[in-house]
Image 1 (spheres, helix red, strand yellow):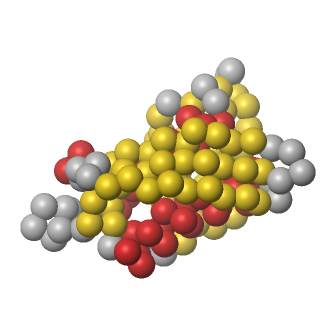
Image 2 (image 1 turned 180 degrees about the horizontal axis):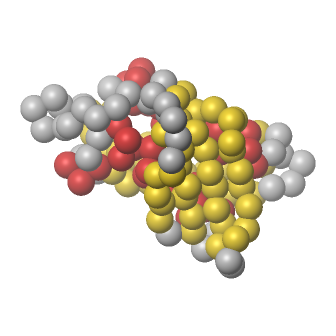
Length: 140
């Protein structure tokens, strides 16, 4: 499981991967949070359960990352641990996850870049070299 930032002219282009879709979605959220702050300085004091449903995997990835952005923006939270426990595809794509973190504290938490939104532009979900890979662009 891991991630890297790819070249993009104005926004942040992310490639995340794992041995499963769950790991790839987990790495995607971790990468996005690293754009926002240094997750190594965020204590996992509180945990939050997330369950999402979408029509396809791309929409599910979009909703997952947008849910994290919403919790950061609306609730003033930062996260250091992400555990996507289930991603299923059928008639509907489903996700279950746990996020752990704490409230933003300007004395302890670095403010890197604000993430405004996730975009569908250049979004990909595929299998590559026996691992699941997701790519997406963050509007910063």
